[in-house]
Length: 182
Image (cartoon, rainbow, N blue to C red; front, side):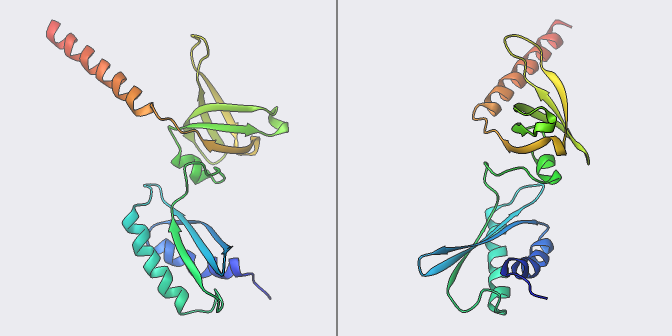
């Protein structure tokens, strides 16, 4: 029974990544001139710190040096976390994006089109969304089964924290005013 290089790499690396409390998201080998780049993408519910990537890189490098899984030609090992624009493909990806704004392309069976909304809950069957209101209308709730989603990505919100901070400051100020009046 023959296994591909990708399967052998995953078999070698996945247990080592798991020992660090991380998920192995992707293993990719691409040519880069006379060398190859072995890109290992890891993630966790709490995100991935730079120090963790560096430590894991040393561990993986040592394990790779002990085997012939990469063959004899030179390669560069790159250990990284997923980028902000990565596709959401697993239930854990949606769970980790809970509270975030996502853009989902729907399957034809689900009516097609796209929806941009905030994930409010995730379970084994799908996601609950809050679709923003348009032109003064209130937000609406929507449920999507995972099978209804052709592809989805997190939408980057540059001003979200500032808006949340202003909203919290406003409610804190209102609370203080209420206390002073009492």
